[in-house]
Image (cartoon, rainbow, N blue to C red; front, top):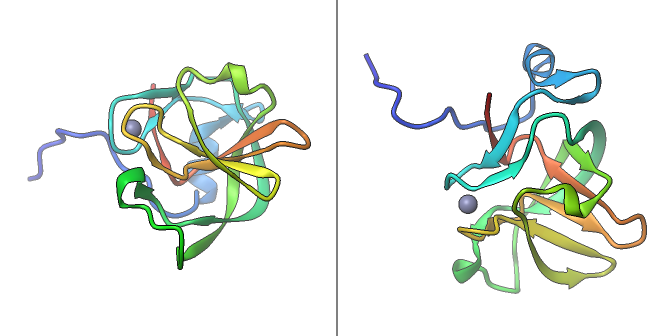
Length: 133
Ligand SMILES: [Zn+2]
């Protein structure tokens, strides 16, 4: 039997069952943290669940990131945060045509989501973060 030494890592979209376990009255039931390090990103109840289709480049560490040929992945489940100051910790990468990618403030893995400069809303992919109660 495998021992549980690290938090369960989420990959891929939420199933209906997982949605039930993670969403309470439209908001995140659990604390959201980085998928790679212990950095806390959002407290429970801060973000609103949204079905939105948006393509994000595959996740990398900033030091491994190259400007060209970054493969994108279409994701359609996000946590929307209407106030960028509501984050516990978050990093912003360089601006790309009206948006900025969100990265972990500590280990700089990303993008975990994006910041829309026109609406000032942030969106965090449900499959690129970890959850703790
Ligand atoms: Zn991190």
